[in-house]
Image (cartoon, rainbow, N blue to C red; front, side):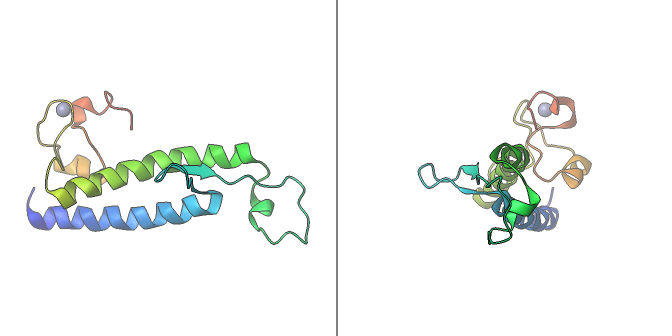
Length: 125
Ligand SMILES: [Zn+2]
């Protein structure tokens, strides 16, 4: 994997991170007491036209937001982790299980992949 390829994947990851952040902000917020963790924003079930919170129209309950937020948060953390590896110059594109280079077509499909094809089922993605 050369620098040009890594830069391309980095751009993809940064774009995905921005999209995920926007999605996360629509259903939750960063927990102020536990920096970096997202929690779902409780939404009033009483949907009143006077309520300026538009989320009330989209989602009915806190549980609904949590169900949406959780998978977004885990994907967001994977993307952040992969970007951190690129930034620090260590570990990006290397399988966390066997330490071998991750196949480039696998990284093309999922730039945040932390395992090679052989071990893609070992670490939950
Ligand atoms: Zn592996």
